[in-house]
Length: 257
Image (cartoon, rainbow, N blue to C red):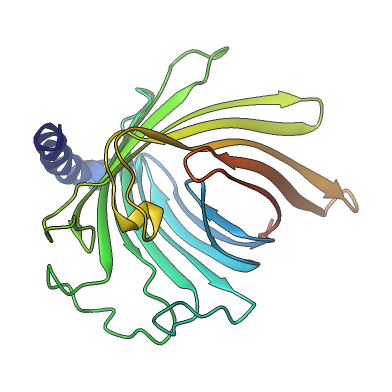
């Protein structure tokens, strides 16, 4: 199974890198956009797994045509200290390319959550780095009345190692279905680990084979203060059957209009 995933991941990486060469052509046809946003959340849950308490999560993104670059981060407020003595801090960098109206998106991400004070951000040695490098492929059905999407993410390099210190190729698969009820935008999520993963997802526990880790319902709306100003808010109920855990998250989005 892992050898098949490895081959698919390498093929996706090559395909992604070659597709990014189309950026210059699309820049002349499509506007360049920047996104600046910050979310305040009551707790930080990643793919169904609790990370830390109340956090601030900024986003800085650039897009042109089907190409995008995104910097996303998370820092907690409660002075939480990990076992290594570092406060909870994460920085993720993602490059992605969407192929027109095909519904297909390929991405490459650098995930780093070593924490404040860990230093060594620029250490990329295979068996020393705290970075996790991940390739992703996502597809949304081209059906207006059934906008179901499915995404597969696999860590192909970095700190993601198995018990023998070999690359584990930890993977996560997620299905999303967005819909609306009156003034509320809703999204149903189901995410799972397709095969055994190590500490990257389960902490000190090892996931033995297939496991559902993220069943969630998210609702988003906005509080209108005037015709020119409204405040986006969201709430999300999350269940993790693998860990027998559940979470209820509230968030506020801050962004310029």
